[in-house]
Length: 516
Image 1 (cartoon, rainbow, N blue to C red):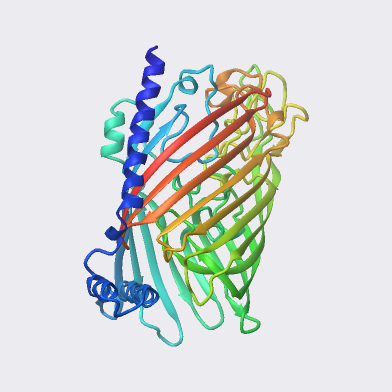
Image 2: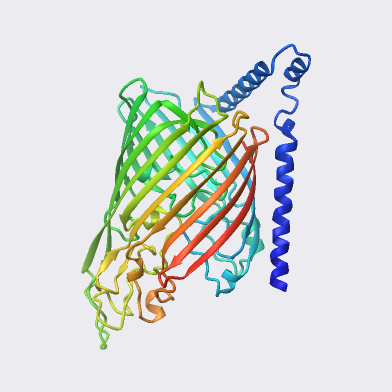
């Protein structure tokens, strides 16, 4: 009775917010116009101009405002400095307690746990962001730029840790570096150095503009330090080719080699459609394009053998290696292309496929339930026994297989399809939805029967390992003004565990944004 009543209360709260947002969206369109178009409205009411002339004039005024907004900035010593960002306030309702603001590729908690059997309602401002964009004047045909972004989803202790409460976590969150890089553009090559989206999969260029952050199952979504080379080459008036090569962070602590990424993107600029790749991004025209890219990396562990009863130590310099690799292909298709640059009554589809091994860190929160990768056993696995388990590799990248006893990279395969339609109101309203699934063919082989202390405090069993996660979602966005945006989304996520059981989470979310 109590649990049922709690669920109804959360449902009523969400229903009330959705109803309020719907009223604002569909009964107050004048909010998007305000007083700035009063003269044009007066001319229209007096039949001095037609509705078509009014619409065209309004669109041109708004485009001019956008151009002025982009041009405005503080200039100092020849540098153009722009401060930007957004305030984001999230309201989230879930039928489990599996996730915070970001779903990522984390597992849904089982229904036979407290977290999996009870719902939750959350509010959060932590996804808000502040950006700084500094551009230098062109010097000797070279342009350079610094870009930094800071949000408040830092790596902080879990709620319940001493001194950390739900209240303190939300009202005093930890800032983190979201992006921090400098870009140098020359006639020959463009160089980017710093923390940004991985160039594998041309990450972020084929993202899903969901309300609940695009880090949902099967969507590549991560940023880290890199040094990359790229250049857009114009082949014809409408066809471009953009190759990229990038040297990126090693996949593990104490790694001896960086990751290497190479790819190519082909784009046809004669066929374009609007695209909003994030919940707060600007709507811009994106051409028909296709990318193919690959990544290579090395994972390693000590293979010196187990400790013995007399306290002997294994060979600390004996390392074993396994190759991590990945191949990605993505396509952006304008199914209702833009004509003459208009936004309304246009649509696009994004599709992406990825396969590889040792690449789980390309997907936010993906661990497959495989804890500290090299796990000792009572028998001689050749990896140090219970007293010498290694913990310098992030969960989900590689582990010792219970079938072969060898150190292996964990395989990952994913696919996603996503579509967006912009209503005929010059892009002020758009709807979208999609599907994604991610699967591992060997994560279930990474069980470990040793004591919990040998595996970072937890055993690896078929009931704790998951080998597939899927999601369906649909959303609605509306821009009341250039600064004020609202998003509504419903999201379904299913986790399939290695013991063939499933767990499901249903989310309803509303977010309000003030962009500057």
